[in-house]
Image (cartoon, rainbow, N blue to C red; front, side):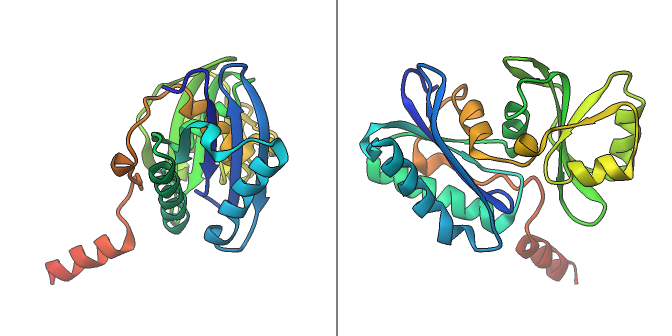
Length: 233
C-alpha cells in the first residue's frame, strides 16, 4: 500500500484523459487535470503529467508509487495508460498498481452515503457494472464486476429496496432511459472516470512491480473473438 508518499494517478480508460498527484500522508490533491478529448490518449497523457509536475514544483523522483485504471474501458485507452505507467515505473524504479475503473468511479463519489452503481458502456445494450456501498469515507464492493444487459440491471436496481447513485459513462443515458425514484445520478464533475478516483482507490491497494501490471478488459477483445470464431469453422 502507498503510505505517506506522493502518488501519481493516471486514467485513460474512456474519452477523458486524466492525471492527478495525491499526497497520501495529508490526504491532499496537489494537482489534477482532465481533458475530454477525441485525440488519442498517447498524445495527451504524458504532456499532462509533465504539466502537473511543472505546476506543483514536484519532481518525478518524489513519486512513491503510480496508480492506473486498468479496466474495464476502452481497449486502446487502457493499453496506453498501462504502458505509460509501466514505462514510468521501470524508469523510476518504483512500484505501481492497477485499479478497477469501476472502483475508481465509486471512490470519486465517496461523499455519497449508500449504494453506488458504476455503469459503463460495453457493447450494444450491455454495460460493465459493479455495485458498492459507501459510508462517506470508504467503499466496499457488494457484487462481482460483470457485464450485464441494461434492462436486467435497471430491473435489479429499481426493485433492490434502496436508492442507488449512478456513475460512469453510461450513467446519464441509463438515468434518462430508466426513470425510477430509486435512482440518483452523480454530479457532472465526478460522473466520469478520472485520476482522482484512481488515486483514492490506489492508495489502499498493494503496490506491485511494473512487470506484473496488466490490463483487465472484463470481456474478450476483438482479436480473441475473431480467433475463436475462426477456430470454430
